[in-house]
Length: 555
Image 1: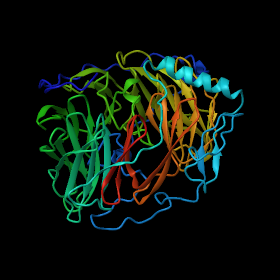
Image 2: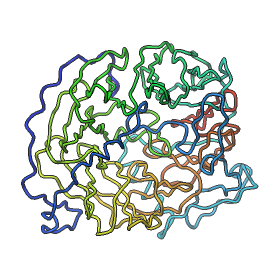
Image 3: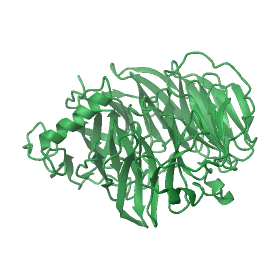
Image 4: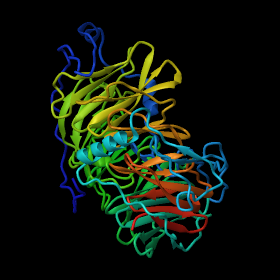
Protein backbone atom coordinates (compact mmCIF):
# COMPACT_ATOMS: atom_id res chain seq x y z
CA UNK A 1 0.00 0.00 0.00
CA UNK A 2 1.30 3.44 -0.85
CA UNK A 3 0.71 6.43 1.37
CA UNK A 4 -2.79 7.56 0.51
CA UNK A 5 -3.54 11.23 0.00
CA UNK A 6 -6.12 12.97 2.13
CA UNK A 7 -7.60 12.17 5.51
CA UNK A 8 -8.89 8.90 6.86
CA UNK A 9 -12.61 8.95 7.62
CA UNK A 10 -13.30 9.29 11.33
CA UNK A 11 -14.81 6.28 13.00
CA UNK A 12 -15.62 5.02 16.45
CA UNK A 13 -14.14 1.60 17.12
CA UNK A 14 -16.71 -1.10 17.59
CA UNK A 15 -16.64 -3.27 20.71
CA UNK A 16 -14.10 -6.05 20.74
CA UNK A 17 -15.75 -9.33 19.64
CA UNK A 18 -15.98 -12.26 21.98
CA UNK A 19 -12.60 -13.83 22.53
CA UNK A 20 -11.76 -17.43 21.80
CA UNK A 21 -9.93 -19.60 24.30
CA UNK A 22 -7.15 -21.96 23.19
CA UNK A 23 -8.70 -25.19 24.42
CA UNK A 24 -7.67 -27.57 21.62
CA UNK A 25 -4.16 -29.02 21.72
CA UNK A 26 -1.54 -27.08 19.77
CA UNK A 27 -0.23 -28.85 16.67
CA UNK A 28 3.49 -28.77 16.02
CA UNK A 29 4.65 -27.07 12.83
CA UNK A 30 6.40 -29.05 10.12
CA UNK A 31 9.79 -27.48 10.96
CA UNK A 32 9.65 -28.47 14.65
CA UNK A 33 10.16 -32.00 15.98
CA UNK A 34 8.26 -31.29 19.21
CA UNK A 35 6.29 -34.31 20.40
CA UNK A 36 2.63 -34.26 21.40
CA UNK A 37 3.68 -34.79 25.03
CA UNK A 38 5.76 -31.65 24.86
CA UNK A 39 2.88 -29.72 23.32
CA UNK A 40 0.46 -30.42 26.14
CA UNK A 41 2.65 -29.88 29.15
CA UNK A 42 2.06 -26.15 29.60
CA UNK A 43 0.51 -22.99 28.23
CA UNK A 44 2.68 -21.37 25.56
CA UNK A 45 3.18 -18.08 27.39
CA UNK A 46 3.80 -16.97 30.94
CA UNK A 47 1.29 -14.89 32.91
CA UNK A 48 1.95 -11.18 32.68
CA UNK A 49 4.14 -9.79 35.43
CA UNK A 50 3.05 -6.39 36.69
CA UNK A 51 6.60 -5.31 37.36
CA UNK A 52 7.48 -5.76 33.70
CA UNK A 53 4.86 -3.26 32.57
CA UNK A 54 7.31 -0.48 33.33
CA UNK A 55 9.56 -1.82 30.58
CA UNK A 56 7.30 -0.34 27.90
CA UNK A 57 9.38 1.83 25.58
CA UNK A 58 10.10 5.35 26.85
CA UNK A 59 7.87 8.15 25.63
CA UNK A 60 8.69 10.72 22.98
CA UNK A 61 9.92 8.03 20.63
CA UNK A 62 7.98 6.22 17.91
CA UNK A 63 7.40 2.59 18.80
CA UNK A 64 9.93 0.24 17.29
CA UNK A 65 12.00 3.19 16.08
CA UNK A 66 15.74 3.46 16.57
CA UNK A 67 16.64 7.12 16.12
CA UNK A 68 19.89 8.70 14.99
CA UNK A 69 22.50 8.96 16.29
CA UNK A 70 23.60 5.36 16.21
CA UNK A 71 22.67 3.67 19.52
CA UNK A 72 26.27 3.94 20.72
CA UNK A 73 26.26 7.73 20.45
CA UNK A 74 25.96 10.14 23.37
CA UNK A 75 22.97 12.48 23.70
CA UNK A 76 23.89 15.90 25.03
CA UNK A 77 22.24 19.10 26.18
CA UNK A 78 22.58 21.83 23.52
CA UNK A 79 26.04 23.38 23.66
CA UNK A 80 27.61 20.51 25.61
CA UNK A 81 30.48 18.53 24.17
CA UNK A 82 29.99 14.93 23.07
CA UNK A 83 31.84 12.66 25.44
CA UNK A 84 33.87 9.98 23.67
CA UNK A 85 33.04 6.39 24.51
CA UNK A 86 34.42 3.05 23.45
CA UNK A 87 31.35 2.54 21.28
CA UNK A 88 31.11 5.88 19.49
CA UNK A 89 34.72 6.89 18.98
CA UNK A 90 36.27 6.31 15.55
CA UNK A 91 38.72 3.45 15.62
CA UNK A 92 41.09 4.53 12.89
CA UNK A 93 43.50 1.71 13.58
CA UNK A 94 41.02 -0.96 12.51
CA UNK A 95 41.68 -2.92 9.38
CA UNK A 96 39.60 -2.03 6.37
CA UNK A 97 37.30 -4.81 5.10
CA UNK A 98 37.25 -5.96 1.50
CA UNK A 99 34.74 -8.47 0.19
CA UNK A 100 36.43 -11.22 -1.80
CA UNK A 101 35.04 -14.51 -2.99
CA UNK A 102 37.09 -17.59 -2.11
CA UNK A 103 39.63 -18.37 -4.77
CA UNK A 104 39.60 -14.92 -6.38
CA UNK A 105 41.82 -12.40 -4.63
CA UNK A 106 41.59 -8.79 -5.78
CA UNK A 107 44.95 -7.06 -5.99
CA UNK A 108 45.11 -3.55 -4.49
CA UNK A 109 45.09 -0.75 -7.04
CA UNK A 110 44.77 3.02 -6.88
CA UNK A 111 41.10 2.58 -7.60
CA UNK A 112 40.23 -0.13 -5.09
CA UNK A 113 42.63 0.83 -2.31
CA UNK A 114 41.60 4.34 -1.22
CA UNK A 115 43.40 3.97 2.11
CA UNK A 116 46.64 2.08 1.43
CA UNK A 117 47.79 2.40 5.01
CA UNK A 118 45.04 0.09 6.16
CA UNK A 119 45.37 -3.66 5.84
CA UNK A 120 42.58 -5.39 4.07
CA UNK A 121 40.44 -8.21 5.34
CA UNK A 122 38.65 -10.71 3.16
CA UNK A 123 35.10 -11.97 3.14
CA UNK A 124 35.19 -15.64 2.25
CA UNK A 125 32.24 -17.93 1.98
CA UNK A 126 32.69 -21.06 4.07
CA UNK A 127 33.07 -24.08 1.83
CA UNK A 128 32.06 -24.67 -1.77
CA UNK A 129 33.20 -23.09 -5.01
CA UNK A 130 33.19 -19.31 -4.93
CA UNK A 131 31.45 -18.90 -8.26
CA UNK A 132 28.75 -21.40 -7.33
CA UNK A 133 28.01 -19.69 -4.03
CA UNK A 134 27.94 -16.22 -5.58
CA UNK A 135 25.64 -17.36 -8.36
CA UNK A 136 23.30 -19.12 -5.94
CA UNK A 137 22.96 -16.10 -3.67
CA UNK A 138 22.43 -13.66 -6.53
CA UNK A 139 19.90 -15.92 -8.23
CA UNK A 140 17.91 -16.33 -5.03
CA UNK A 141 17.71 -12.58 -4.52
CA UNK A 142 16.66 -11.80 -8.10
CA UNK A 143 14.09 -14.58 -8.35
CA UNK A 144 12.46 -13.83 -5.02
CA UNK A 145 12.55 -10.05 -5.38
CA UNK A 146 11.17 -9.05 -8.80
CA UNK A 147 12.70 -5.84 -10.09
CA UNK A 148 15.75 -6.00 -7.79
CA UNK A 149 19.12 -6.07 -9.52
CA UNK A 150 22.73 -5.31 -8.54
CA UNK A 151 23.44 -1.59 -8.23
CA UNK A 152 26.11 -0.28 -10.58
CA UNK A 153 28.23 1.32 -7.85
CA UNK A 154 30.71 4.06 -8.81
CA UNK A 155 33.30 5.88 -6.66
CA UNK A 156 31.90 8.65 -4.49
CA UNK A 157 31.72 11.98 -6.25
CA UNK A 158 32.61 15.32 -4.76
CA UNK A 159 29.84 15.90 -2.22
CA UNK A 160 27.13 18.47 -2.68
CA UNK A 161 27.14 20.75 0.35
CA UNK A 162 24.16 22.43 1.96
CA UNK A 163 24.87 25.36 4.27
CA UNK A 164 22.34 26.01 7.06
CA UNK A 165 21.67 29.46 8.49
CA UNK A 166 23.21 28.38 11.81
CA UNK A 167 26.24 26.02 11.76
CA UNK A 168 25.69 22.40 12.81
CA UNK A 169 26.53 21.76 16.46
CA UNK A 170 27.34 18.74 18.59
CA UNK A 171 24.10 19.17 20.55
CA UNK A 172 22.02 17.28 18.00
CA UNK A 173 22.45 16.47 14.30
CA UNK A 174 20.45 14.13 12.10
CA UNK A 175 19.72 13.35 8.45
CA UNK A 176 16.96 11.48 6.63
CA UNK A 177 16.73 10.55 2.94
CA UNK A 178 13.33 9.96 1.37
CA UNK A 179 12.93 9.76 -2.40
CA UNK A 180 14.74 12.65 -4.07
CA UNK A 181 14.92 14.69 -0.87
CA UNK A 182 17.27 14.83 2.08
CA UNK A 183 16.19 16.35 5.37
CA UNK A 184 18.75 17.64 7.85
CA UNK A 185 18.29 18.86 11.41
CA UNK A 186 20.50 20.43 14.05
CA UNK A 187 19.93 22.28 17.33
CA UNK A 188 21.76 25.48 18.20
CA UNK A 189 23.04 26.60 21.61
CA UNK A 190 19.56 27.83 22.62
CA UNK A 191 17.93 24.47 21.87
CA UNK A 192 16.19 25.80 18.75
CA UNK A 193 15.93 23.05 16.13
CA UNK A 194 16.41 24.03 12.50
CA UNK A 195 15.39 21.66 9.71
CA UNK A 196 16.67 21.94 6.13
CA UNK A 197 15.23 20.17 3.08
CA UNK A 198 17.47 19.67 0.04
CA UNK A 199 17.21 18.22 -3.47
CA UNK A 200 19.54 15.19 -3.60
CA UNK A 201 20.09 15.51 -7.38
CA UNK A 202 20.82 19.24 -7.60
CA UNK A 203 22.16 19.75 -4.10
CA UNK A 204 20.01 22.85 -3.70
CA UNK A 205 18.29 23.93 -0.50
CA UNK A 206 14.49 23.71 -0.82
CA UNK A 207 13.51 25.24 2.51
CA UNK A 208 14.73 25.84 6.03
CA UNK A 209 12.46 25.90 9.07
CA UNK A 210 12.71 26.64 12.79
CA UNK A 211 9.06 25.62 13.22
CA UNK A 212 9.85 22.82 15.65
CA UNK A 213 10.77 25.42 18.28
CA UNK A 214 13.00 24.91 21.31
CA UNK A 215 13.73 22.02 23.66
CA UNK A 216 16.40 21.23 26.22
CA UNK A 217 17.15 18.04 24.30
CA UNK A 218 16.27 16.84 20.81
CA UNK A 219 16.15 13.15 20.18
CA UNK A 220 15.18 12.13 16.63
CA UNK A 221 13.84 13.06 13.21
CA UNK A 222 11.60 10.83 11.11
CA UNK A 223 10.68 11.62 7.49
CA UNK A 224 7.40 10.50 5.93
CA UNK A 225 6.01 11.41 2.47
CA UNK A 226 3.82 14.28 3.72
CA UNK A 227 5.35 15.25 7.06
CA UNK A 228 8.68 15.46 8.85
CA UNK A 229 8.38 14.50 12.52
CA UNK A 230 10.76 15.81 15.20
CA UNK A 231 11.01 14.31 18.68
CA UNK A 232 12.28 16.14 21.73
CA UNK A 233 13.80 14.43 24.72
CA UNK A 234 12.07 14.13 28.07
CA UNK A 235 11.74 17.38 30.00
CA UNK A 236 13.06 16.80 33.54
CA UNK A 237 10.54 19.24 35.05
CA UNK A 238 7.32 18.17 33.31
CA UNK A 239 8.31 14.53 32.54
CA UNK A 240 6.88 15.08 29.06
CA UNK A 241 8.29 15.30 25.56
CA UNK A 242 6.99 16.70 22.28
CA UNK A 243 6.46 15.43 18.75
CA UNK A 244 6.24 18.19 16.12
CA UNK A 245 5.07 17.67 12.53
CA UNK A 246 6.38 19.92 9.74
CA UNK A 247 4.92 20.06 6.25
CA UNK A 248 7.33 18.15 3.97
CA UNK A 249 6.51 20.60 1.18
CA UNK A 250 7.47 23.88 2.81
CA UNK A 251 8.61 23.21 6.39
CA UNK A 252 5.68 24.96 8.08
CA UNK A 253 4.56 23.53 11.40
CA UNK A 254 1.38 21.49 11.01
CA UNK A 255 0.80 20.30 14.56
CA UNK A 256 2.48 19.17 17.74
CA UNK A 257 1.56 16.79 20.53
CA UNK A 258 2.89 16.58 24.06
CA UNK A 259 3.67 13.02 25.15
CA UNK A 260 3.87 11.43 28.58
CA UNK A 261 7.00 9.65 29.72
CA UNK A 262 5.67 6.22 28.71
CA UNK A 263 3.66 7.24 25.65
CA UNK A 264 4.48 5.83 22.21
CA UNK A 265 3.80 6.83 18.61
CA UNK A 266 3.31 4.25 15.82
CA UNK A 267 2.60 4.94 12.13
CA UNK A 268 0.05 3.65 9.65
CA UNK A 269 -0.51 4.94 6.11
CA UNK A 270 -2.34 8.14 7.15
CA UNK A 271 -2.67 7.76 10.93
CA UNK A 272 -0.28 8.14 13.85
CA UNK A 273 -1.28 5.88 16.73
CA UNK A 274 -0.70 7.55 20.11
CA UNK A 275 -0.72 5.42 23.26
CA UNK A 276 -1.98 8.01 25.75
CA UNK A 277 -1.05 6.36 29.05
CA UNK A 278 -2.41 9.14 31.27
CA UNK A 279 -5.86 9.14 29.66
CA UNK A 280 -5.72 5.34 29.26
CA UNK A 281 -6.70 5.50 25.60
CA UNK A 282 -5.37 4.59 22.17
CA UNK A 283 -5.77 7.62 19.90
CA UNK A 284 -5.60 7.76 16.10
CA UNK A 285 -4.18 11.13 14.94
CA UNK A 286 -4.31 12.33 11.34
CA UNK A 287 -0.72 12.71 10.18
CA UNK A 288 -1.38 15.83 8.12
CA UNK A 289 -3.33 17.98 10.59
CA UNK A 290 -2.91 16.32 14.01
CA UNK A 291 -6.64 15.99 14.57
CA UNK A 292 -8.03 13.04 16.50
CA UNK A 293 -9.77 10.63 14.13
CA UNK A 294 -10.68 7.89 16.59
CA UNK A 295 -9.94 6.66 20.11
CA UNK A 296 -10.63 3.60 22.20
CA UNK A 297 -10.10 2.66 25.82
CA UNK A 298 -6.75 1.25 26.90
CA UNK A 299 -7.00 0.83 30.68
CA UNK A 300 -3.88 -1.28 31.19
CA UNK A 301 -1.15 0.16 28.93
CA UNK A 302 -1.27 -2.24 26.02
CA UNK A 303 1.81 -3.21 24.04
CA UNK A 304 1.49 -2.23 20.35
CA UNK A 305 3.02 -4.13 17.41
CA UNK A 306 2.43 -2.78 13.84
CA UNK A 307 2.03 -5.47 11.18
CA UNK A 308 4.75 -5.55 8.50
CA UNK A 309 4.96 -7.21 5.10
CA UNK A 310 7.81 -8.35 2.88
CA UNK A 311 7.58 -5.09 0.91
CA UNK A 312 7.97 -2.99 4.04
CA UNK A 313 11.38 -4.53 4.70
CA UNK A 314 12.88 -4.21 1.20
CA UNK A 315 14.07 -0.58 1.40
CA UNK A 316 17.06 1.17 2.99
CA UNK A 317 17.63 0.46 6.67
CA UNK A 318 20.06 1.41 9.43
CA UNK A 319 22.46 -0.85 11.28
CA UNK A 320 19.71 -2.05 13.64
CA UNK A 321 17.14 -2.50 10.83
CA UNK A 322 15.23 0.77 11.31
CA UNK A 323 13.64 1.80 8.00
CA UNK A 324 14.94 5.01 6.40
CA UNK A 325 12.36 5.11 3.61
CA UNK A 326 9.24 3.50 5.05
CA UNK A 327 6.35 2.69 2.79
CA UNK A 328 2.85 2.36 4.13
CA UNK A 329 2.33 -1.30 4.79
CA UNK A 330 0.31 -3.46 2.45
CA UNK A 331 -1.25 -4.54 5.74
CA UNK A 332 -2.40 -1.38 7.57
CA UNK A 333 -3.07 -3.11 10.91
CA UNK A 334 -1.54 -3.32 14.34
CA UNK A 335 -1.64 -5.89 17.14
CA UNK A 336 -2.66 -4.79 20.64
CA UNK A 337 -1.61 -6.96 23.60
CA UNK A 338 -3.43 -6.30 26.89
CA UNK A 339 -2.31 -7.01 30.44
CA UNK A 340 -4.83 -9.87 30.63
CA UNK A 341 -2.96 -11.61 27.74
CA UNK A 342 -5.65 -10.79 25.19
CA UNK A 343 -4.42 -10.12 21.65
CA UNK A 344 -6.55 -7.83 19.45
CA UNK A 345 -5.93 -6.99 15.79
CA UNK A 346 -7.06 -3.48 14.79
CA UNK A 347 -6.90 -1.26 11.72
CA UNK A 348 -4.87 1.95 11.83
CA UNK A 349 -7.49 3.80 9.83
CA UNK A 350 -10.40 3.57 12.28
CA UNK A 351 -9.14 1.52 15.23
CA UNK A 352 -11.85 -1.09 14.69
CA UNK A 353 -10.98 -4.63 15.87
CA UNK A 354 -10.87 -7.40 13.28
CA UNK A 355 -10.05 -10.28 15.59
CA UNK A 356 -9.26 -11.14 19.19
CA UNK A 357 -7.89 -14.06 21.19
CA UNK A 358 -7.61 -14.55 24.96
CA UNK A 359 -4.46 -15.93 26.57
CA UNK A 360 -2.27 -15.61 23.49
CA UNK A 361 0.55 -13.33 24.71
CA UNK A 362 1.67 -11.03 27.49
CA UNK A 363 2.87 -7.45 27.17
CA UNK A 364 6.42 -8.53 28.04
CA UNK A 365 6.63 -11.27 25.38
CA UNK A 366 8.82 -10.76 22.33
CA UNK A 367 6.42 -10.46 19.39
CA UNK A 368 6.64 -10.06 15.62
CA UNK A 369 3.56 -9.40 13.46
CA UNK A 370 4.61 -10.05 9.86
CA UNK A 371 3.27 -11.30 6.54
CA UNK A 372 -0.12 -12.30 7.94
CA UNK A 373 1.32 -14.16 10.95
CA UNK A 374 1.75 -13.32 14.63
CA UNK A 375 4.88 -14.82 16.20
CA UNK A 376 5.02 -14.97 20.00
CA UNK A 377 8.04 -15.97 22.08
CA UNK A 378 7.09 -16.59 25.68
CA UNK A 379 9.48 -16.80 28.61
CA UNK A 380 8.33 -20.16 30.01
CA UNK A 381 11.01 -22.84 30.01
CA UNK A 382 11.74 -24.43 27.65
CA UNK A 383 11.15 -21.37 25.47
CA UNK A 384 9.24 -21.74 22.24
CA UNK A 385 7.84 -19.62 19.43
CA UNK A 386 4.18 -19.90 18.40
CA UNK A 387 2.72 -18.71 15.11
CA UNK A 388 -0.89 -17.47 14.81
CA UNK A 389 -2.92 -16.56 11.72
CA UNK A 390 -3.69 -12.83 11.96
CA UNK A 391 -6.73 -13.32 9.76
CA UNK A 392 -8.18 -16.01 12.02
CA UNK A 393 -6.74 -15.91 15.53
CA UNK A 394 -9.14 -18.65 16.60
CA UNK A 395 -7.19 -21.24 14.63
CA UNK A 396 -4.83 -23.40 16.62
CA UNK A 397 -1.35 -21.85 16.66
CA UNK A 398 1.63 -23.69 15.26
CA UNK A 399 4.83 -24.26 17.23
CA UNK A 400 7.59 -23.18 14.88
CA UNK A 401 10.48 -23.83 17.26
CA UNK A 402 11.16 -25.16 20.75
CA UNK A 403 14.49 -24.44 22.43
CA UNK A 404 16.30 -27.18 24.35
CA UNK A 405 16.31 -26.86 28.15
CA UNK A 406 18.64 -24.11 29.43
CA UNK A 407 18.58 -22.35 26.03
CA UNK A 408 16.93 -18.98 25.37
CA UNK A 409 15.46 -17.40 22.23
CA UNK A 410 15.75 -13.73 21.24
CA UNK A 411 16.17 -11.18 18.42
CA UNK A 412 13.01 -12.25 16.56
CA UNK A 413 13.06 -10.59 13.14
CA UNK A 414 11.19 -10.97 9.84
CA UNK A 415 13.40 -12.47 7.11
CA UNK A 416 11.51 -12.20 3.84
CA UNK A 417 8.60 -14.60 4.28
CA UNK A 418 10.40 -16.41 7.09
CA UNK A 419 11.16 -15.64 10.73
CA UNK A 420 14.74 -15.39 11.95
CA UNK A 421 15.86 -15.48 15.57
CA UNK A 422 18.83 -16.20 17.82
CA UNK A 423 19.18 -19.18 20.16
CA UNK A 424 21.65 -18.92 23.06
CA UNK A 425 22.92 -21.63 25.42
CA UNK A 426 22.67 -20.33 28.97
CA UNK A 427 24.47 -17.00 29.22
CA UNK A 428 27.23 -17.90 26.76
CA UNK A 429 26.55 -15.55 23.86
CA UNK A 430 29.73 -16.66 22.11
CA UNK A 431 27.68 -19.69 21.05
CA UNK A 432 24.73 -17.77 19.57
CA UNK A 433 22.99 -19.58 16.71
CA UNK A 434 20.82 -17.96 14.04
CA UNK A 435 17.71 -19.82 12.82
CA UNK A 436 15.41 -19.14 9.87
CA UNK A 437 12.05 -20.92 9.97
CA UNK A 438 9.07 -20.93 7.62
CA UNK A 439 7.84 -22.89 4.64
CA UNK A 440 11.50 -23.33 3.65
CA UNK A 441 13.71 -23.34 6.75
CA UNK A 442 17.49 -23.52 6.80
CA UNK A 443 18.80 -27.07 7.01
CA UNK A 444 20.65 -26.22 10.22
CA UNK A 445 21.29 -23.16 12.41
CA UNK A 446 24.23 -20.88 11.75
CA UNK A 447 26.65 -20.07 14.57
CA UNK A 448 27.40 -16.34 14.92
CA UNK A 449 28.74 -15.13 18.28
CA UNK A 450 27.19 -12.23 20.18
CA UNK A 451 24.48 -11.17 17.74
CA UNK A 452 22.98 -7.76 18.57
CA UNK A 453 20.47 -7.49 15.71
CA UNK A 454 19.24 -9.35 12.63
CA UNK A 455 18.63 -7.26 9.48
CA UNK A 456 17.03 -8.95 6.43
CA UNK A 457 18.43 -8.37 2.93
CA UNK A 458 16.01 -10.11 0.59
CA UNK A 459 16.09 -13.77 1.59
CA UNK A 460 19.50 -13.30 3.25
CA UNK A 461 20.12 -11.79 6.68
CA UNK A 462 22.81 -9.66 8.29
CA UNK A 463 23.82 -10.80 11.79
CA UNK A 464 25.03 -7.56 13.36
CA UNK A 465 27.43 -7.56 16.31
CA UNK A 466 29.06 -4.74 18.25
CA UNK A 467 31.99 -4.43 15.85
CA UNK A 468 31.39 -6.97 13.07
CA UNK A 469 28.66 -8.00 10.65
CA UNK A 470 28.15 -11.48 9.19
CA UNK A 471 26.06 -12.15 6.08
CA UNK A 472 24.07 -15.39 5.97
CA UNK A 473 22.65 -16.18 2.54
CA UNK A 474 19.21 -17.52 1.62
CA UNK A 475 20.37 -21.13 2.02
CA UNK A 476 21.95 -20.58 5.44
CA UNK A 477 25.56 -20.32 4.22
CA UNK A 478 27.67 -18.02 6.38
CA UNK A 479 30.17 -15.43 5.23
CA UNK A 480 33.23 -14.45 7.20
CA UNK A 481 32.63 -11.83 9.94
CA UNK A 482 33.75 -8.39 8.81
CA UNK A 483 34.85 -5.47 10.94
CA UNK A 484 32.70 -2.40 10.44
CA UNK A 485 29.03 -1.77 9.79
CA UNK A 486 27.01 -3.29 6.93
CA UNK A 487 23.55 -1.92 6.16
CA UNK A 488 20.75 -2.64 3.69
CA UNK A 489 20.11 -0.48 0.63
CA UNK A 490 17.37 -2.68 -0.83
CA UNK A 491 16.51 -6.36 -1.10
CA UNK A 492 19.65 -7.09 -3.12
CA UNK A 493 22.29 -4.51 -2.23
CA UNK A 494 24.24 -3.37 0.83
CA UNK A 495 26.51 -0.59 1.99
CA UNK A 496 29.52 -1.14 4.23
CA UNK A 497 31.31 1.37 6.45
CA UNK A 498 34.84 0.80 7.70
CA UNK A 499 33.98 1.43 11.33
CA UNK A 500 31.13 1.87 13.78
CA UNK A 501 29.06 5.03 13.38
CA UNK A 502 29.86 7.95 15.65
CA UNK A 503 28.41 11.33 16.61
CA UNK A 504 31.96 12.74 16.55
CA UNK A 505 33.37 14.27 13.36
CA UNK A 506 35.53 11.66 11.61
CA UNK A 507 36.08 9.79 8.32
CA UNK A 508 34.51 6.56 7.09
CA UNK A 509 35.55 4.49 4.08
CA UNK A 510 32.60 2.94 2.22
CA UNK A 511 31.95 -0.01 -0.11
CA UNK A 512 28.91 -0.95 -2.16
CA UNK A 513 28.00 -4.64 -2.07
CA UNK A 514 25.54 -6.28 -4.47
CA UNK A 515 24.23 -9.43 -2.77
CA UNK A 516 26.42 -12.35 -3.82
CA UNK A 517 29.03 -10.23 -5.61
CA UNK A 518 32.35 -8.61 -4.72
CA UNK A 519 32.46 -5.34 -2.80
CA UNK A 520 33.01 -2.17 -4.83
CA UNK A 521 35.29 0.41 -3.16
CA UNK A 522 33.50 3.75 -3.08
CA UNK A 523 36.07 5.92 -1.32
CA UNK A 524 35.99 8.03 1.81
CA UNK A 525 33.20 10.01 3.42
CA UNK A 526 35.26 12.74 5.05
CA UNK A 527 34.69 14.79 8.20
CA UNK A 528 31.11 13.74 8.93
CA UNK A 529 29.08 12.85 11.99
CA UNK A 530 28.57 9.33 10.67
CA UNK A 531 25.91 8.43 13.25
CA UNK A 532 23.67 11.03 11.57
CA UNK A 533 24.02 9.54 8.08
CA UNK A 534 21.07 8.23 6.10
CA UNK A 535 20.98 6.67 2.64
CA UNK A 536 18.95 5.28 -0.23
CA UNK A 537 20.03 3.36 -3.33
CA UNK A 538 22.00 6.28 -4.79
CA UNK A 539 22.85 8.84 -2.09
CA UNK A 540 24.41 9.07 1.38
CA UNK A 541 23.43 12.20 3.34
CA UNK A 542 25.20 13.25 6.56
CA UNK A 543 25.69 16.12 8.95
CA UNK A 544 29.27 17.35 8.71
CA UNK A 545 31.22 19.53 11.14
CA UNK A 546 29.29 22.73 10.37
CA UNK A 547 27.16 21.98 7.31
CA UNK A 548 25.48 19.06 5.51
CA UNK A 549 26.81 16.83 2.71
CA UNK A 550 25.32 14.49 0.12
CA UNK A 551 27.50 11.88 -1.61
CA UNK A 552 26.30 10.06 -4.74
CA UNK A 553 27.50 6.51 -5.52
CA UNK A 554 25.58 5.81 -8.76
CA UNK A 555 25.54 7.49 -12.17
